[in-house]
Image (cartoon, rainbow, N blue to C red):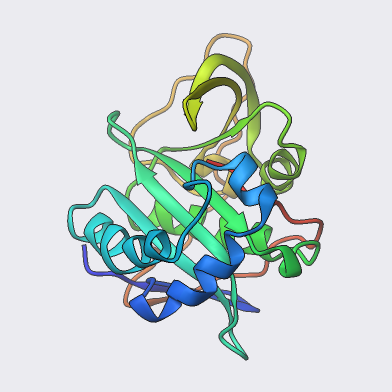
Length: 224
């Protein structure tokens, strides 16, 4: 897929470029990002160069992971990173994100997640967007809950981080949670409520997708 840019009220979610390496390197010196994500620790300048100039473009080209640099629309300052990863199950994706320390607490991550979720459901044909974070990452869980993810439980030993297996929380967002139709029919288990979409909004198209802002609130250091 050719990289695209998503636009919200305050943010641009654009493809990473090699020129972002300095900002990524600086942000990932934060101990919280190194603790709660699977970024290398310690995080060197070469790690940032590989991520921005190689891993991110490769993910778009082979349709495995769509990484976005989350930047302010006015200044272009790097707020954080957000990725949508394709799951082996058709129509299933996973969202991951981190937020630079100085930009937390302003609702930027929630705004970015909602925009990326809408794009996943309307442009990628997604029927399920998963969120996973190590048990104890309460800021990440707060963003997931604020953006409509339903918590589905814990996975024991569900994450390998720096050679240590850890338990993870799991949540999911469905198209109907955002009032959108799904690609495939969904039949919930007996007795489980299912929210049907109220209407069918127009699908996203082109290189820019304009989305409403997310609900303000405290932001997260990172999730997977």
